[in-house]
Length: 76
Image (cartoon, rainbow, N blue to C red):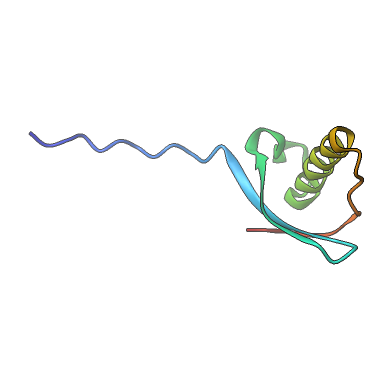
């Protein structure tokens, strides 16, 4: 008996590559699609920057190590 093909779910995250002002790079930073709501007219990369800065701030609070400022973000 043949299997029914399941429909693929929409990805729950979007990946971004981040370059920091100190020259460090992080690849494939995940941002929840819930945080990337374009209905308000904001740019996708601006929303991603805000979400990644929040992630960095949370990590900095836990580790007591501050991250450099974000220089650029590109969609992976």
